[in-house]
Length: 569
Image (cartoon, rainbow, N blue to C red; front, side, top):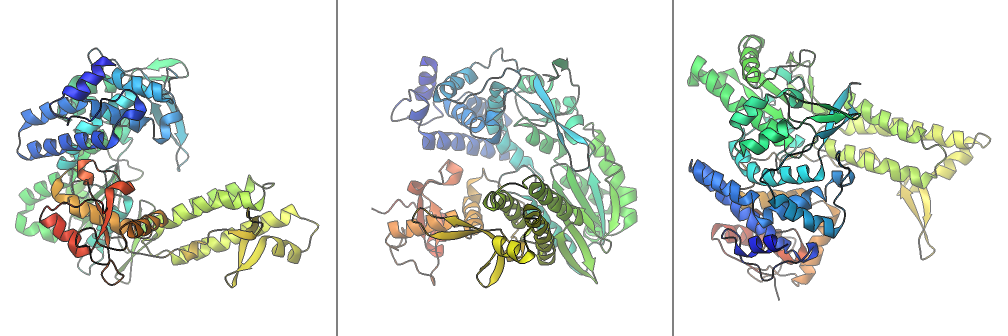
């Protein structure tokens, strides 16, 4: 490991470490994160100055840095795919293999990726989606180059692109659609667009010519091929679904869809008429919708331009999923139904999405006929809570109540089948108990102290409906100017998270109820916000030793005057 130690201590771009790490557990992760963030911030700065020579130099430095390699190995050994091997069967599941992997990533000269292991997973429409699994080494190499590519991709991205981007979600795309369609004079026509096999058909040559990264490495990934049932297949198009870097490559291919269309319409109709066309583009990954003032505008002007835009990238619109719809008829997007009722736009869970949930719940109940009630509740609750949280920003109460009712009948049939000789009253009293003044499907559970508590089934209708605040389109997580905004969004999002509530309480006691800046009391009237001592944009973690509580005004003052604050002693 001599080469690693040398790069760790001698790099001019990385801060000197207090001690050179000798194994995986001796790595200073805070310092590693900060070093990578510093390089990413410089990269964005050079990009905005159009200094591509320095951007490329910084990308090269990052992909060869010890800190970058550490984060790349950490990412692929902590994500959901950490137990899934590629064609070589290799996994990095011990500190020793992770430490050796850091050294392995330094050997980039002569690097040759191995073919991807191809498997197929079912889609909602009955078809199957190909999933390509790289080896651990190739995954880590992609994660390493992603660190150098993502800051540039974020800086180039369309404002209303929401898929596979830090701090953005489907709820943000929904929020932008609401803004675009909810007013009285908003567009009444929508182009529902879907790209046919986006990941499978993106032109390799377009990616090689336009993606701002090492062309040789990118070419090797694109041309690595796949292995299916022991047979090798080469691929001439597409970026494999399953690769860490694939989503960002797809985003880069679809960038300029929004800005390019607005530029085209401005040149054709004039900037003064552009606003009257009511054209808005909202994209999430390869699904997007375009609003317009008329059906003719969408069909005769916008569809041909989009078709040409996609053809340059080797892509085309899916005929079965692409259509022009009036908002009074409604359309589905990202699991929601958008429709105007007497001129008022309402967003509800789509019928298809609700049916898919009920089918999944029925399948869980059906396949666990002999399981204890406690086990069944443990299986159902995560599904119910996840679905409810997803739809909590929209008009979902009616759908929640209907699904609760359907699930009740499903569980009633489950309970009766388990005891065919018992009366209905006996069955009901065994599985439903009165808790908080209502009958609940719940199981008695004995606690270590001998007392009995009840594990209850989550009720969808109990979900609080809370409108989502859309992220600003210009937000860039790698730009220090947006650090305060990003921190505020994280605070707002986590306010109702139970783990976050505990964290706030612990910080409050740790600081004796005082603001870390002004040292005055933190009260319900004054309010409080969490601040990162080492900013997130500089690689600061979310751990307790890097967090303090501040008054909202003190927090704003600290950012505006570039003040610093530490942990209270």
